[in-house]
Length: 457
Image 1 (spheres, rainbow, N blue to C red):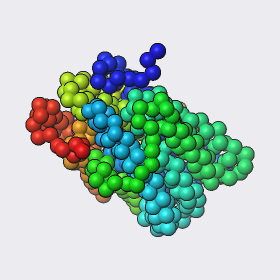
Image 2: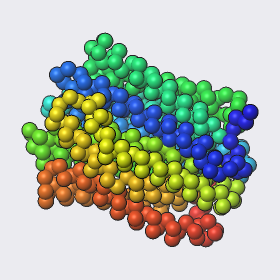
Image 3: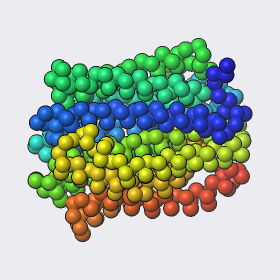
Image 4: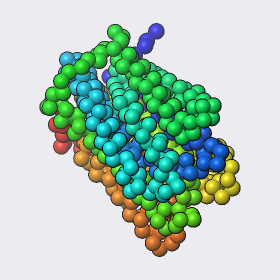
């Protein structure tokens, strides 16, 4: 039985399914880290609502930490896939080892920086006096496990890039199962409350990290994991390729900060925390949509990069097309679910009727333009896989700027709740702009006009 996938020869639609669906499911399972935490935390007696809002305030920092794993993981795996496609295993080995070394250094630096600055950051990001103790407890414990979070996320890309998407999915599945099992034990049995949720998450990430490192050291890997002193030349190229997806995730933090701050400011002392709690539930739901979409596009990226290195433009075209079809099918299904069933999702987090009504309304607003958002995700990540990082970054930032602007502007004209409309406005406009730019540039690129040398080494 065939255990690996041949990115240069196998059927393109089948390859997209084999790589993107497991990656999509892996991302979906990965969402359970945060959602399960929030479900259990939201149901803690007496302090559940404030604890849930505390996690919501922490969300931008957690997103920012994760973005560094993406910086090295995507940047390194794109270069890695190009080298494999060109048949240059020695250079691929260098890239893998350098990526591992960079993640080790980054995790140490980030742990120190965020532990030292967390109190000030939480106050800046909208933590009221009632919310702050819960947010501080959760963030302190979570940040202490940064090493495991970054390594498991960043190095998992290299498992998929070597033709083992199923093992990549298993990485996140292990973490999710551990988290789900430990959360109720730590939170309710040991009465650790929000500290128990954070501790369960760190242990789950440690489990995933150990599995990733063990897998990459196995003999069945075409290019096994090694450790080297970081080489500046390679590190620059990894960061250059990974900078676009990194900045996309990092600016997500800014968006979350802006939304929380606006809701707190215009909602006032009596309504601000309520809005943040509802927004935390809405953002949890959105993770069920955006994370699998990132899984689809992330699973397609090694195929695009590999066939770029092998100089097979027709296979690149096919990969982009089938990834888009898969994304459209998924977002279409989630759009319908969002119109019919969101109240079942909301009830898992809270029994408070006010929070339920507000969160259901927020989900339906946030998901108004998720189908067009498929074009944004697929086209931007395809350009990144081809090394066109400046263009993909610019297109991503357009969406962030639109979102930031509408979130800040709408409450000035209407009410604090109107900030929720920033999501569909940004999604619809950015999808249209990205599609026009993509079809104008992409065709010339595949014909060999204006190709970048960023991924050539």
